Image (cartoon, rainbow, N blue to C red; front, side, top):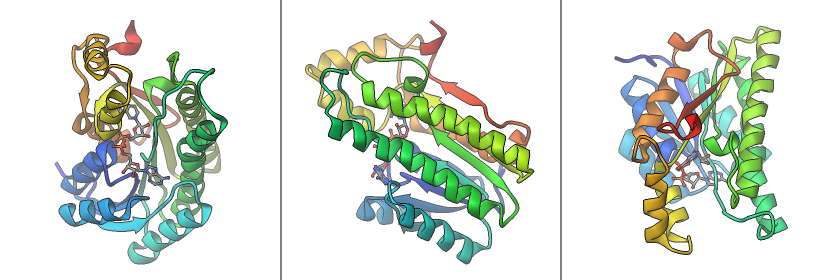
Length: 251
Ligand SMILES: NC(=O)c1ccc[n+]([C@@H]2O[C@H](COP(=O)([O-])OP(=O)(O)OC[C@H]3O[C@@H](n4cnc5c(N)ncnc54)[C@H](O)[C@@H]3O)[C@@H](O)[C@H]2O)c1
């Protein structure tokens, strides 16, 4: 099926992991895809692999967001889908996390999504409305003892999403906004979390054992959920949270 034919999508963090898998799925569904990422080399490589476009984008920068969203609108005359996937996941308990790490996590995960939503709404309302999908996490719903900053940032994304959705519905902009809450997904982010843990082998097996479904998600499985939220078939879905975690939060 080509459910996104004629639509144009901007994906932050599109060079890697869930953002990249989403870009691939969107392209298969017929969308014009623009990847935004702070990593220019990886972003340009990913874009050429998919036949997509690339916009340099540091999500913590208001100016970068303005430039990227305006560039997409100028080139295509529309911005129909925005996926806020750029994120970082430093670990640390409340006693360990430094103020610097805290601020950086908030800047990328929460300010980045805030700015994305602001510029997404600004541009989408000049066109024909659209769909914004924010990557929160199960860590935006349940706590982890060593995820103080990440938990706080993803909890923020969860409720920011609802505020954006309600504002847009009230204004009649035709813009929807939903959050996606994955559990463990096999991406470079998760590999890095495992690699930098005290005992990587133990962490790897503990993670998998903690998932009722017995494994981590593939990025493509998260991309399928995002494609649904981007497409018109989810036209009545807004302000909602979509968990994809192999049963972790069901326990
Ligand atoms: N992998 C998981 O287990 C998991 C679980 C739940 C939620 N998530 C969330 O999903 C999203 C994607 O995660 P992933 O696993 O694909 O990560 P990833 O590390 O594979 O990819 C993240 C991408 O974001 C980019 N990025 C980082 N900082 C940026 C910035 N300031 N500006 C622009 N781009 C920036 C990176 O260059 C990278 O390309 C994140 O928001 C993450 O918190 C991931």
